[in-house]
Amino acid sequence: MILIAILLVLLPIIAVGAVMARKHFSLNKGGSWRVPQIAGRLQKLEVLYGRSLEDATSRYMERRFRQFMAGLGVLWILGLGVLLLPAGDEEADRIRRPDAGEDAAGIAVQLTDGEVTTEFTLQVGNRHLTEAEFGAARDAAVEWLKKAVLGDNASLDYVTEDLSFPKKDSSGILKLSWDTDALTVIGRGGTVRRKELREPQQVRITVTMTDDVHKSDTELIANVIPESYTESKVERVQRLLGELEESSRDSEVFELPEQMEGITVNQKQTNKRDMICKLYPFIILIAGILFLLQGSKEKERLKRREGLLQEVFYRFVKRLTLQLSAGESLQGSLQAAAAIERQFLVPEIQYTVNRIRTGTPESSAYAELGRSIGLRSYIRLFSTISTAAPRGSSQLLNLLEQEVKDAEAEAKEAARKKGEQATQKLLLPTVLLLAIVIGIVLFPAISGM
Image (tube, rainbow, N blue to C red; front, side):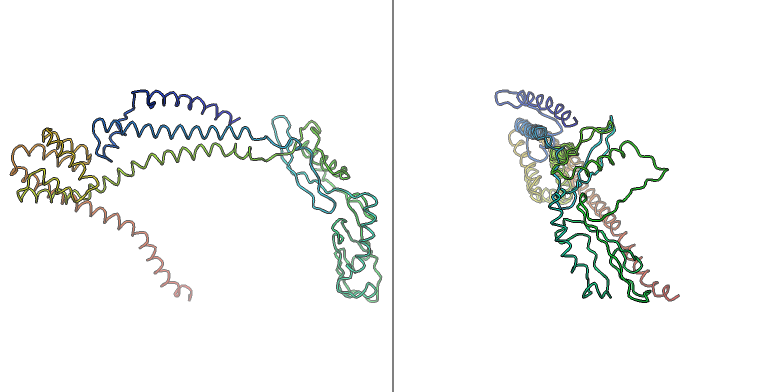
């Protein structure tokens, strides 16, 4: 029922997603999505503006949406396939019992009393022999026992060592139980005790051979229940099922009754469908986690970008100041300084220089460049440049020299924090190493006290 409910929830989600995909992503439609947060992220990873940024955002949203819808479709098809799996064996209540001599088989049985279900294991014994089969097996076992019982003795006429009392005959079909009329001399396990004997003593050994139906000389065993114990209805059904199974061992198949004592009886079935149904919610959870992890790749790239740009900021400002001091133009100085980091700075500054050359005012172009990079230090730097550039290079140089000092102080502070973090990481291993050294030094003194 849980699986059906999940499929019923997924179906309308897939239908709505298909309609949205046709409305927003169809080649015959002119619509597109533009999410500001995603657009800003893509703009930082690549140099994109205007129509190119909108197209890249639309392509990204379409790809992510199609991945999401494809995942939902796969999960829905998987769930439908699970529902189409066979529920179980139609002849589950017809249990083929083991052949004579084989071990009993345990089957899981469910007892349903109203809303309460109890599970227990019912032992199904092997098929019983016919009268003729039992007689032949008994005669063969008697001949085999004349030698098998001897152990290390030469003959039963002169016993000095323990005897061998096997639990089954050589074929493994007959069960053997042993008894003697002098247990203090020869025990039921075949142990011979001669220490207390004063003269030779003949001991009668009785072996009982049975296939649980036929027997040659056997005794009954009673299962005595304490008076304080009250048998529940479920336990009574368990006992009756055991007795019913034992009384029907002359047939190849043991058939469970549908009901007994008002309790529903059926064999517990374990199949692939049940297993997949239990795992299906976990499959959906794992698929969702993988989908979210895939979306976090852009955030990791942004984090690496910000770290790299912040790391080269001091060198960038210093190189920019040196180029301007040497008489280089502002645009040329920016291009030369950006060469220290080609992955992000070079494309951004080259794009800004191209905009200025095509008529964009320098003040607005440099201010927008700082906002495009998105880091506080770069925003401050290019805001300073956009304000001071129109006033002359001398004033710009004075401001940039102050910016170099500030950037150098920030770089030193960042290095100090990294050093403190590294020291904190090394603190615990150092303490553990110190404790080990103290323990090694004190151990001989403590052990000698």
